[in-house]
Length: 199
Image (cartoon, rainbow, N blue to C red; front, side):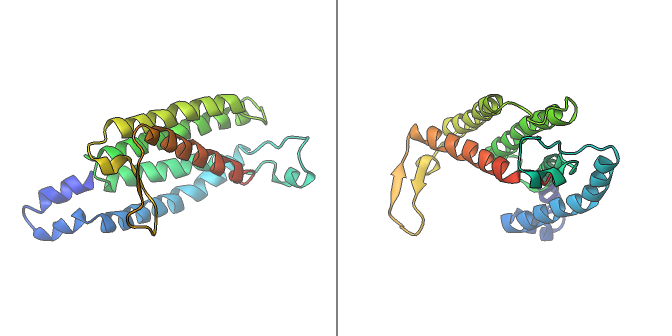
């Protein structure tokens, strides 16, 4: 959004052309997300603690986990807000990759919100059943993979370049969809499994 404004202002002062550089906008996006986290995070944690909106721990788990009961949860909501706002402010919204990644991130966040809703409001310590999580992650992950493949206009967009080997390139063709699906869903589950009990 701000890149569009900077380009309009560059008609009057060429100094605004500096916002065309992706490195500058990346730094500003990171700083924006950081400021949002610092400003919104502490009050959000206090409010969650005050209303006792915290992690319920299963009785059949390790005893060491019981001390984590009540840890404020829904930290993912803060991350999603920070990422979405900074992306909308600093990214080139004319780039289809920005929208595919942002919408996929928000869709996976919605699955997390549904999981937290079951844990916090319905008091179900197991949250959303694994099969439903996997189903929706698969739907959104496959949707993103198909969107990336269907909108590719250059061969390089569906190729796999092996790092450190300049000429080792694989043209994946439709297998690009499968690889992208596994990367998206696998990454999501890896983060979910390591996140655990700390909000």
